[in-house]
Every structure is written in C-alpha cells, then in structure tokens.
Length: 87
Image (cartoon, rainbow, N blue to C red):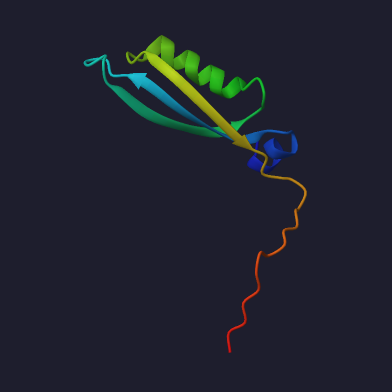
C-alpha cells in the first residue's frame, strides 16, 4: 500500500527510540531508532518488529519510547509574535 493510502487509513508516521543492552556488555545501553507508518494506539507494526527483535536478536530490550504525528491534518493558522520592517 502506498504512503498516501496508509495516511488516509489513519496510519501515522511513528518513531520509536529503542534502548537495548549490548549482548557482550550487558551494563551498556545502545540506542536504535525505528520509524515506520503505524496505526495508533495499538501499533501493530511496532509490535511485530519488537517481537522479531526479542525472538531473533541477542540484545535484550531495556525500554521503548514512542512518538507519532498525523501527516495529513487540517491546516492551522498562527499569528506572528512580532512584525519587523527592514528599509
């Protein structure tokens, strides 16, 4: 499915910051950034990725932070805080 079709079906650009323990040095944490279109609030694509991670990769997960934003949304209007004139 194309990106536009996913967005029209309420998928949002989702970014996850994944912290995991290094396999050889468990006291150290490493960061991995995952980004994909996903459906909030259940995040099926992210859950599939994390299940794959736990099954196939050696680095145990420490934490996951998730952020998303709808790409297609109503336009918003903002007023400028100041107006500068250059002559």
